Structures are given as structure tokens and as C-alpha cells.
Length: 129
Image (cartoon, rainbow, N blue to C red; front, side, top):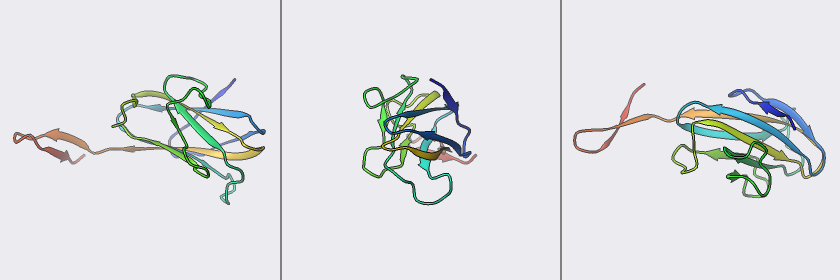
């Protein structure tokens, strides 16, 4: 089963049949917030209710094997923050499950979080990049 590599902020188009998965991967090279979003490739409302499953452990995540998932009906994105205990620097794998035949685009957004350091008084301070 093929895995399509995602590049930050670049939509990758795919299609699935009812009950089928499309698989993706994204490389995370530093602490950040990772957002994986499913969109309609034509920019209109997304048809169907795709489910998103994300893992750093399973190359082909699914309903039983995942660490993060789109939780609510109608949710079209999964967001993972570096403060999450399961966050790792490395490869994240994502699966989109079609509730019906669908064409869609997946976009990975990586938002680098501000660097922090501990001051002499023990308080966190933001370091400007």
C-alpha cells in the first residue's frame, strides 16, 4: 500500500472508495504544531465525512491503530502539538478513511513554536528568532 509524502503547505490530491484508506506521511524535523487537514480539492464544501488517523508508530494507521484522530463528526483536521506526550521529531503517518467515494486534498501545516529558555529567576522567557 503506497504512502504519499506530504510537503508543508502543499495540497496533495487523492481519492478513495467507500471504506477505503489513502495514506500519507510528513517529516517533522523540530518541535512544532502539526496540523493535517482534509479539504475539497476544488475549494468548495467537502463531501462526505472523512476520518483522519495519525500515528508515529504505525505506517498505515486505521480505526484500531492510531495515536490521534479527528474526533468529532464533521471534523476535517487533526492537530498535534509538541507538548503532547506522544509527539516525536520524525515521521508522522496519516490515513484518510472515506465514508463514501470521495476526491479530496490533504494539507500538512507545521507551525514552529517560539523558543523558550529559563531565566535566572526560573521563569520561561520567549527568545525572539
